Length: 147
Image (cartoon, rainbow, N blue to C red; front, side, top):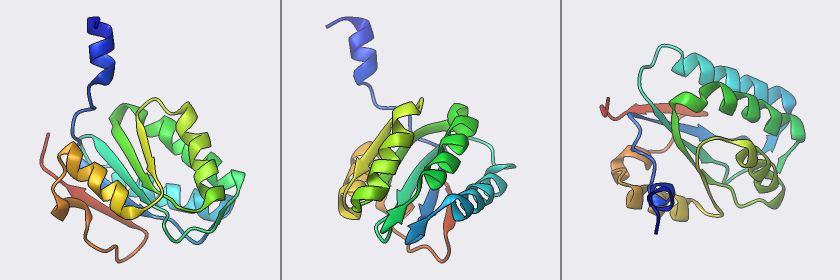
């Protein structure tokens, strides 16, 4: 195997911060933009790199405007993102997610269930205490101290 092929098999480095996003039941342009603005506000003064954990397990529907808001956010944060992990069982929201992941620069891991996504996180090296706490709102930032 060539060195280039071996490099492509390596997992991305662990992030210094985990960003948890709980998605609403119905995603549209307005709540997508609002959620992305909240993410921008949360991260604007936070140093380091980010691993995003999208919890869409309660999501039933997502419109193209919702996906567009996250495409824009993904482009803005690409240099500071190490990877994106998603748990989205619904077929329409998952399809919108694949749309965003297709153009993303960083790796996206998309799972149908939260336990599958959590297993992936553990296998990647994130401690279970880092991502299994329940969210009190739509967003949570966990600084891991890996700067």
